[in-house]
Picture 1: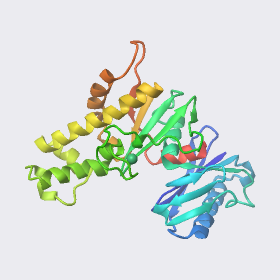
Picture 2 (picture 1 turned 180 degrees about the horizontal axis):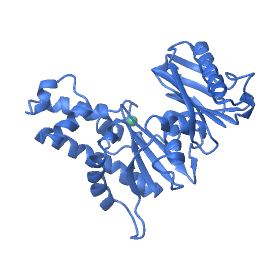
Picture 3 (picture 1 turned 60 degrees about the horizontal axis):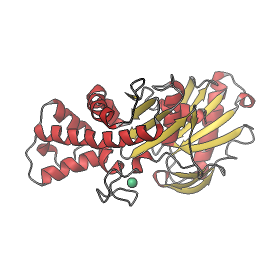
Picture 4 (picture 1 turned 120 degrees about the horizontal axis):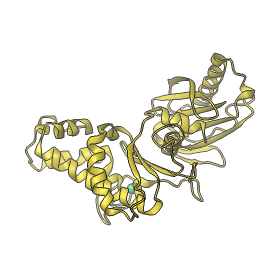
Length: 306
Ligand SMILES: [Zn+2]
């Protein structure tokens, strides 16, 4: 029996999972922003409540994993910077004692989502995969031989910060030209707002100032020329990143998650068409490019499997 916890800016979700990563029961409470002791108390209470509801003793839990939004010290089981949670330097290893004696593991939320999809989602049939989350930012996770690759400082997998255009768009990380600065939902919106500010005509003009990625995708569906142009450029930039990742890792599978992945085949078709000619390959096997299947449960399952 394992417990996975997904620590988000609005809610703390927890799940009791089988050893193979199947969710048996889950529960959530609102996040106590800025209150580390309150947060640790809620996490332990969620774990205890899940065990009680399932008729499981805390002794039967073999592992507790936590997915956190921010930078972390994996060995010290410590969140270092948790801007979205309003807290820094929080230690989690002892949060579940004395009831739970098992090890507590920590990783970032994008890595947990990748491990979740690799265990029980879109890439459960393969051993080598990468996941790219297309949300406010661009998150990433690398799974090699069924295990997360975390690097010498345990923070590997920042796929969104591969530069695809030297000197290009400013990225939130301080560099320029990162994949995130072209393929995140927030930058997709920024490019649309910029085009409208330059006077381009579009059905999006009436929503200028409060656009979101879904509105632009809907405008693509409605045949709007500006939205279509922006979406084609978005796909060209994202496929540049995907081709780079595939050429480095040759994963069996690339899984796309996050809000923009909800566009489904309409996103996958151009990405496959643009990416495949850019990759080194023999004709025996191509990397599959698919969308995530677990939604918000990916992070919970991945945390449980850390
Ligand atoms: Zn960056």
